[in-house]
Image (cartoon, rainbow, N blue to C red):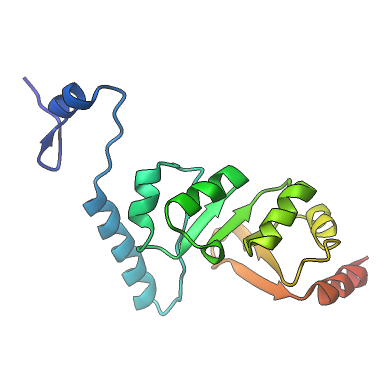
Length: 167
């Protein structure tokens, strides 16, 4: 009979003990992969920050494990931001990338110093009107993702002038 293992654990025994479906993570492998990624970019003299996307997997146990191994979280909702808080991430370690943000959500994000990735002109026009805004981050993925992503920071006043100049 074939037996499946995760590290030294027999999967059938774990399933019998904890029931199914059973989600298992090999934290040693995850940590090793993070270290390899950081080492490879360091060797290439590229400064990176690793943000884990909760849309990939929002397991609280996984987020708590990642807490001191990565720079932060990329979220798409207030629910995911609150999961980040539960896992011990600070507001400045959390960003949101969402094409639609309500006024209530925007107020929460700005009050809590959550970084907002802006990815469209309509979103810029919506967000820039908020008086609590002090800094804007525009995320520009380069063509075909060949080059590293460019991030630009602007004051709201400067951004308004840039938008006006493009019209």
